[in-house]
Length: 304
Image (cartoon, rainbow, N blue to C red):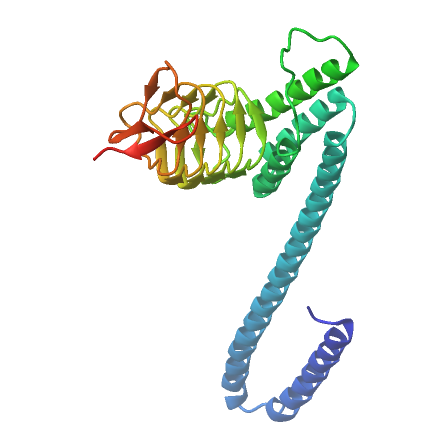
């Protein structure tokens, strides 16, 4: 942008130019000769061109000044928005760390609204929710048999965690475009997840390394665009992988204690996985079956 000093210098220069031009015209065209009229017309035409160029320059200067003002306002709006997002994020994160279940629930819903309204911050917020779910947790053995404050606290914590899983799963379904969060990665390694339902979702990549799935774990119809890592995962209940799309998957060291259903449309490599023997309904991927091992677990092997 032009400084006031530069503008003043240009103003003085233009005044000097105008004064010089007047003196020059009086000197050269003041004789009264017929040629003076022609010369005067030429000078008028040239002056019009010069004035037009000056007007264009002034218009350009005004446009630049307007553009600069708009950029400044946009930057200020962006900075104000970022500060507001940071404040809301910090407040919600503090709520998520509260020792009171209702406050933690409020923090989850605040984070959800923040992510919905600010797409650039969605992955960061998902990372925070996943970090919360990765914190150590022991589910109550029977949610209907709460005998004391400790069981009540565990039940409340389970409700908060279940809400977090439902919120995440609800925003990962492309068939709900108005609330779909695209290109999201999940890191739920070493978490304890109760009754996970992640169906018909689309995820960039996911880590469930060492994750314990209590109750049914349902991934039916979900698409993992990249790597899906289930190494050392423990499935205590039903493992439902029907019609799941894996960009790349690994189940090495995974253990299946309950029913298993990979359907007929889920190609997956189960090298190194194992299953608890028993009279259970199990549908492995095509070309895979179980073989008795040296311990209480059967090895999942590729058929030859």
